[in-house]
Image 1 (cartoon, rainbow, N blue to C red):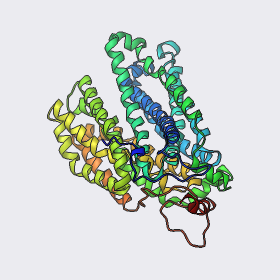
Image 2 (image 1 turned 180 degrees about the vertical axis):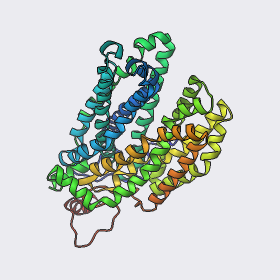
Image 3 (image 1 turned 60 degrees about the vertical axis):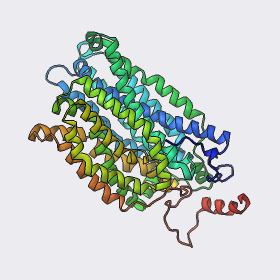
Image 4 (image 1 turned 90 degrees about the horizontal axis):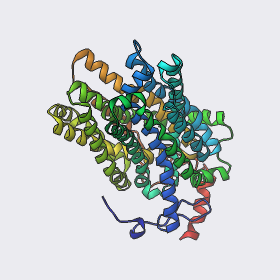
Length: 478
């Protein structure tokens, strides 16, 4: 991974000056602001995925505590799935609010809701203590968690993109997904650590609650970091120029009427992104155990080692996209996954070492998509509808194709015995992604300021107060 700093790179131009200028990464003050923006954005994402990691790895304990008897694991899986059902609703509500009132206020609210809901799961009395109220409370908290997540991810990605220098949006934005993988791996690792330090009976009785409770301090740290920053400079410019949405409902109507094309393109790309994600990360432990016969601990080790390799590599891919472009990165990723999915899944069936290699190869080919999410998707929309456009397009597609991926894979394998189906499912998703990327506009290095779609030709008779101010200031900066 390159180790030079921006300050050491003379080829990097300084960022524009002004009251609402982007942080200049060539100065100590600018780098400090960027570090806070990165940390504040990424930790919310880490909190979200910490919950998913903990929930997935404590599923057996949750089933015993809340869904005894005939309900079994179906109830636990319902708790997992319900959060995805609520994500689109969260996107439709939080997104337009973020475009009307600002990113910071919404992100402060969503991280509180996410962390508190996750922590409260660790405090719910068991079914043996309060009866049917126990699973009802679990589902209710998962509803809150899913609803808040619908606004968290789109807002964090938008916030990070709008704080990042245009020429390094991929590099800085990749740290948001660093938080994704770190949160998921951290949740899994905490549960495994508890299992190692406690007896199985202690884990069953009360130990499983500890990882959920850790979400509260994690969320508190995220809230503190976010409170140290002003709203994004890009949103502030539009708001000061009187170009922000006048009403929440009006902003939603504006988005759906005038920007449905980028929503469709983004949704198609998210199909491939999330089918690969939830097949490769969420479903993988189940697949390795049930289909390939690995032990629970061996499957967890494969997943954790693969995730650690991805965490180490993700900033490199984000930085690479700033020079290579987002479209080429996505194409290489999709083509590579399409070609290698079946060979690598076959390789996983040959034993522990081969499973680790196959997972690592697919994970590394997936990274060009994952690393560039917050650089690619926010840049598909103008500032005044960016939060809502991302939140709605991403969460609707995620609810349909992301949260259902483990269920689809498991159901088809059970019904047909075809153990390579996950590879075929990934290949089909990659084809949808390749078609969608064909219509993606390249925005690497372009400004995402103003109320026009970045990279889109502007009619000479159209005006944009924000862009006009930038053009007027340009000679003075030179």
